[in-house]
Length: 185
Image 1 (spheres, one colour):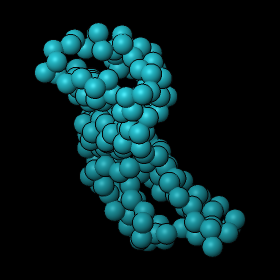
Image 2 (image 1 turned 180 degrees about the vertical axis):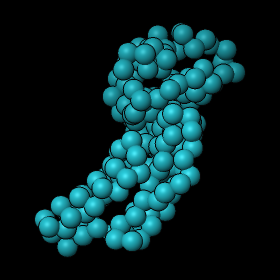
Image 3 (image 1 turned 180 degrees about the horizontal axis):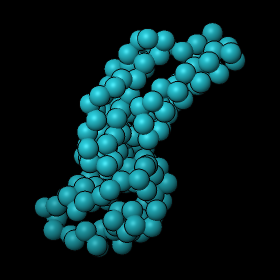
C-alpha cells in the first residue's frame, strides 16, 4: 500500500484549506494512496497579526489537531515566526555530519587544505540548509559562528587557550566566515 507523506497545503482562509484538503485527499485515494488521518496536523500562521481562533480544519468530519510547530523536510516550521529551534536543529545536523567525517577531519596526516574542503562540502551545507528562508538575528549568527569556530578549531587541533584568532584559523583552512556564506545564499 502506498502512503502520501509530507504534503503541505497553504491558503488564505480555513475554508480554502478545507476545500484543498478534500480535493487532495480524493486525488490521492483515487491514485491508490492511503491517507492517514491520525497523523495529520495543521499549523495556522497569522501573518496579518490577528489570531483567528474560530473554525476548524477537518477531513470527513474528523477535526485535524492544530500544532504550534512541525518538522517539514528537515526544517522546523513554527507559528510564532521564531527560528531558534531551527538554528539549534541545523547546528546539531552539522555536528552529526562532523562526527561522520571526523576520521578525515581529525587525521593529523591529512593536509589542512583538504580538511577545509571537506568541511565546506559536507558540514557547512548541513548547517546552512534552509538559511535562505530564515529571518535571521544577530544572536542566531553568533550562535552559528560559535559552533563553526568550535568545529574548525577542532579540525586544526587548536583550542581557544592557544590564543589564535578566528581569522587566522579560517585563513589556515581557507574557510570564509559563516555569516558571509549566509549572505551569499
